[in-house]
Image (cartoon, one colour):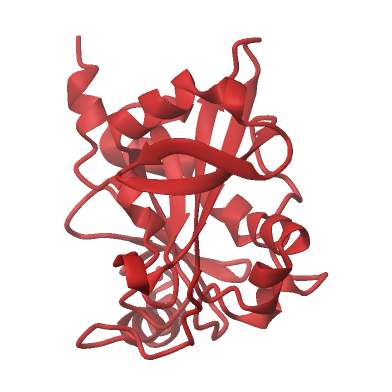
Length: 239
């Protein structure tokens, strides 16, 4: 596997998210009591709505460049993944109906797979084919990281299963780093996703996915690809 050194994001305005959250939302909260264009602001992170889709973004209100930021692995680091999962009701309200947990997911891109130099977690519907593939292969996913030999959006991932409706204090960044010394030494090339599942027992669960970017294989490390910014599943499940 090839390592990806931290580099500027490939975008015309790679600091746009930081500017919006730090300068615009913060200023509007002080002036008007509402953090527009952010949906909410506080508790160490902002929630921003994508104006072009149902997608939400959770963005720390402190300066963190991305998944490579060592602060994310500190013992007292906030669990931004749980903060993102907590937006489920807000997301449901935005799309106008409850989204089944198996069709709801989160993702973060690697250094080379992102366009912004401020940590942000994508929140959106899951691609229907990805949700179906996970449901059909739950017996291959256990409580420890293991290769999932099923391609999701054309890519292979490692996967682990967490039981429960929420992550709680289980932080996917730390779960990955604790199990993989290569990742712990350099999280920059890692890309991750968190997707809800319904277990055969009827219990709720969460699948955590991880993959390391490999530029030699034209893989920039963008797990965001397992999400569907058109929320096709909502149209497919209409009565």
